[in-house]
Amino acid sequence: MLILDLLYFLLLLLTWPFWAARFLKPSQRRLLRGRLRPQLEPAAGQAVWIHAVSVGEVRSLRSLVAALERPDRRIVLSVTTPAGFEFARREYPGLAVILSPLDLSFVVRRFIDRIRPRLVIFNELEVWPNWISLLRRRRVPMLLINGRVSEKAFRRYRFFRPVLRPFFRGVDGFLVQNEIYRQRFLRLHIPAGKITVCGNIKADEAVSSARQLPPPEEVRAHLRLAGPPRMIVVLASSHPLDEEVFMPAIPAQGNDFFFIIVPRHVQRAPAIAARLQRLGIPQALFSRQQAADAGLQALVYDRMGFLLPIMSIADIVFMGGTFDSRTGGHNLYEPAALGKTIVGGPYFNNFPDIGRELKEGGAYRPVNDSREWREFLAAFPGLDSERTGAIARKAVDGRRGSLACSLEQIERYLA
Image (cartoon, rainbow, N blue to C red; front, side, top):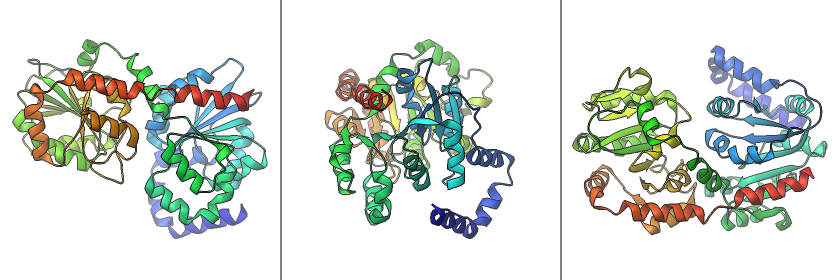
């Protein structure tokens, strides 16, 4: 651990101009304090410590957290990204939500001493050597749920396998999404007895969330939609490459469709609205829209936590992140559980199983450029969207069960 700390400090020394510029901002200094010392009151008894990386992983934990909550059980949720942290604080007001610790041994000790975990659950895969080593020394069991290893990450882990092997072996159980990921973990020399295929917990969460949505008229009122009825197209969790394909189709289709863009990173919303304006598209930024405007063609939604209700009133969901193989697409389970026709680019490698089934069934329509996207919109009124919606729902239903599988394994450690 001393060697790891020295390596971290060396890296910090080499990159100090970058970090110095960041920590001039008060908001970044507050984040650093949260990562150095747990912003958490001491409590009697031990806790279940759950860790998630970002917004998507935090959202997928909703049903799991509800199932684990008990009056005599404290649950602590740590989150890596600032956006995920803010979302978790709003999503779980009754939970102890903290920023995850920096992986320095003296910092991790503070967190373990304050939380006193009985079990640590990692949602998906993050390898933090000091964190895992110190938990192992304290004999705190660790469980990875919803585990996956992308092809890119797998190549990287294989290269560093001799170094990472003891840290991987420190985790007591790996609950993985599918057989492909199971084989990759095996090739990383994880013992077969530690690996269980449980499926993707996001399938269960998508179905559960779809049943708890506000009524359509409430969503429309919230968005201040006005004017004659138009079909609604939602660009969900967008990145710049998605917007390059998506936006050019808006002027030609503005009379028949209304377009809503929900960026993956909310801080990009003003720039997106400015780009729409340069293209001559009547648009509004949600936070600045004072009243309904029947003349709009596009709305840029610049708030977090409302994407699923927005998708629920859509006729078409254009999935973001699917035009960049490095991003690999975002959560296809949610629009599929809603029975939507889904459009996107060629890359859905973050959700390979459901993506492949949706594509083969015609519920996911891949487009390669703006021309194909415009052609799809022009042909959409003649498509059988009820049939593709049924195919999408069936694909999600067939993948449910991960929550029950995960809870069964978790309770073994808590019994």
